Length: 530
Image 1 (cartoon, rainbow, N blue to C red):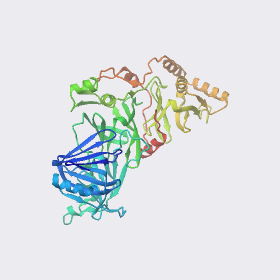
Image 2 (cartoon, one colour):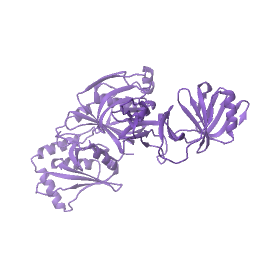
Image 3 (cartoon, helix red, strand yellow):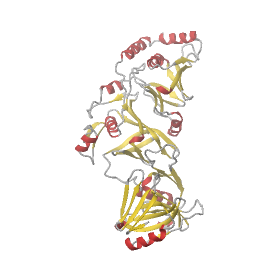
Image 4 (cartoon, rainbow, N blue to C red):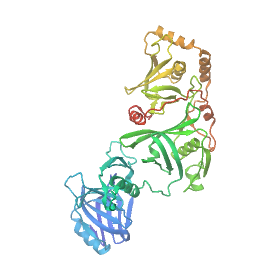
């Protein structure tokens, strides 16, 4: 619609991977503006920044594409066919930049050529573009196997989980870059070269002014590797050897800080929804392992004292010099705004916070917490107490008359069950007391009550009878089962509950399962508390 030197169109979409609502597009001599109908958010572009303009056939009608001098591209979809001629005349009169009418490839071929054009990746069939992707939406790009690139995309916030979104795309790029190859040189691997270009043009390798703190080389055991962590006010970015991940703080469901049974390490666990992906494997949990005595010194950047007082209630410090696990957990608690769950009142036969057991073929430790049952390290298995229907003790009397271990099976209200095996017989009474305290129904698989009493008696008559009674008495006297870590505002010291948590005499000889098997099983078994 032409109106006194301006053009305006209704029901026009500012195109992106998550475009949902239309708005009004208005062109004037100084540039153009688009106002979203639902939020009244305004986007403006100055005509002095235009380098060229193109007209395409699109899914909602026609698309006006604005190319800027900095290489970025803005697309407006939903324009009527009759707008073409008046737009041509308007651009020629007021913007003095090239205006092209381009045709898209509609052959339907899935082979062609992928090229970087500005901040977009274009896939061309012949000399026509089939589709393009905004590189600013790319969160990770990696060569998974020979000649294949996996490109992962960021997911929108505050969107219905039933909505379909583009998560990943794979491109097969065979051969070498012959253009750059000299005589006698085979040239660069084409897939690796394109992958590096995508990383360079996307925001993955861009260090922006948003980063508040960088933590180098954090050891991670799920998934295995070392990651540099950059933390911003709204998200964190993990940089690994092969994979990079952007994680919104709003995606962090729970945080756990738990002592390992060897009394030398601390496990820091992030529960994520949605999970991160590495190839075909999803990881709903990240598990970092820190040496209890290792310290780190970091300084905050791109933040001032006034922001710390107004946004973080003065709890952030400009400088940290403390044990690594304490610094990392404190930063997560304040920046992500999540409470940190630590061990509660449960104590094992060895006065630890966990019991040694096996989940399928993987040995690990079971942490009975105040509101959850958590198995670590791999595969991470979280069972909220509220989702447990009942618990069954199994293999109580199998084999010899004095069994050395038993199994524990959790039946969930969803109909699923999760089993843990090879639990030392000395832990039986402590688990029973814990289940009673949490009002969780439990039973023995052996329906003969007399045999159950006999097995219980065998446990109590063992050489550890005095220790069992003493631990049970200590558990009953526990008066501070609080599982939320709060250092009381002192960011440079650890609360007393940590000193208790590391007082563990359990066996530390732990075997770790294979990472690929653990990761695939994590999706099947992990559940999250609402």
